[in-house]
Length: 86
Image (tube, rainbow, N blue to C red; front, top):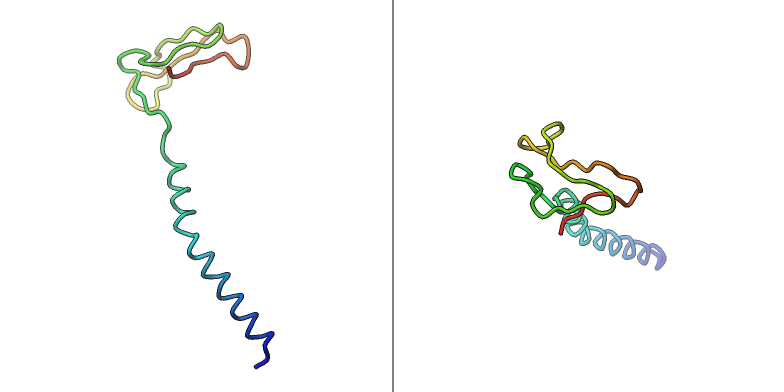
């Protein structure tokens, strides 16, 4: 067997083991992307959420993700207007 084939085999082996060693880290990043940054219930009001700009915030039972209430931001006059968590 010539040296080029041996070198190519070793290189391929090292590349594969490097990729396999990185796989658990990639899997953890994918799982972390499935978690919420904020998970609030608006059943008892707007909690720590405030308005930014001309927006008025309140709760609404129209489109709730979980439970019966959601946060409603009305009266936006600019793209940056909205709700933020204090």
